[in-house]
Image (cartoon, rainbow, N blue to C red; front, side, top):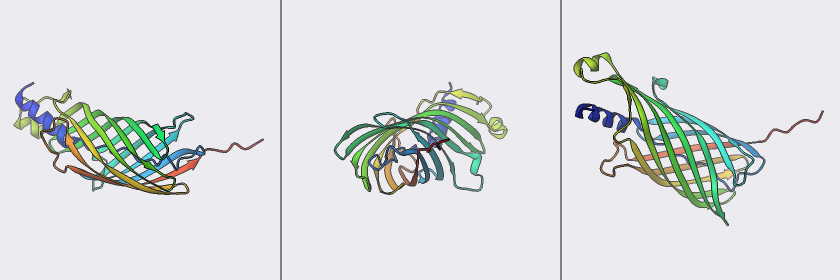
Length: 231
């Protein structure tokens, strides 16, 4: 790979990754009857985005939620860029009101601009530790968002200027962000409202993202499991 290709790849993936700030469940307010969790969230990192989430609580101990989510930027061309995720989040340790949880997700995302279209498969691993009560919670989170492999499709105009550039799949020379921050929320009945803020650093610890901070405001609605009607 030439130096020019490496530079394009690094810059492209660096701009492409938007963080997957994952933890959003108040485990203390989650009951055995809450079989489904839906979520709506507003985010600010590289761009303003809106996301939706659906999770299904499995019949396991400790509790595990299998979920999928989808987010798009707020703008005139909404579906030019998107991020979709699928994975699980689970409570690992419970000691009185203190809880440790983790979230593991696979990511597929698309980023498009006039010179190149990027399709990426990645992963996100995060953990949260905090103090959880049935009506409120506060915790810290730490995670790593990795762009594993990316497909580059360059525009004709760009190829005319840089003839040595090729389309195709590339494993990025660098393409990951560590993130850490605080999250807090309140819970009432089947509802959670939460806020998280934090900071981002690249995996080489040498460069800083254009906007090194993130924030998310979210709302969860928990749905009880279906009740079977007797014949």
